[in-house]
Amino acid sequence: MSGVPIERLGPAETRQVAERIAEAFLVLPATHWLVPDAAQRRPVLADNFEILVGHAMAHGLVHATADRAGVAVWFPQTGDVPPPADYDARLAAACGAWVDRFRHLDDLFAASHPHDGHHHLAFLAVAPDRQGRGIGSALLRHHHAWLDANGVPGYLEASSEIGRDLYARHGYEPREVFRLPDGTPFFPMWREPATAG
Image (cartoon, rainbow, N blue to C red; front, top):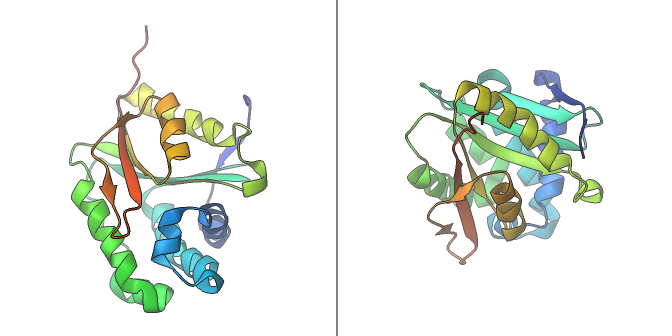
């Protein structure tokens, strides 16, 4: 899919982006471990993602297709990025009984995160009924063009084999896999900027 209009979003759309990510991530095994109660999974995920998307609105980049079917949340890691304000209290309020699981995942992410300068793709999400149509690839190409032009690497943690394979097609190389306590894998991946010629 080429020629997909991509827009940068502002804070007014924070909740909408968080809801889109939660909807897209419901099928992922990691979210089943994070929130075992199926009835609570989507609202808890959306509340958690709202903290991070709001932080990206202030300290990162949030892109979406014009129809908001796909969203991408990037954090530049090229200098000091402050943590979200009142993160511990907000995480506890958002995640309730499951907060320790989210903290455990945060610790795993932190332990695997590279220290070299890069842009971190925190979330790439497409509405379930629109997946497989090139929307995620269009969002990746949009920001990769900037990364390549500016010589900046990209980093992410794929949460499924399908995601891992998508990112591999866009130039990401695998790093050491880490796992949740139930064995669910995450696939850290790194992309060097493409060079002309």
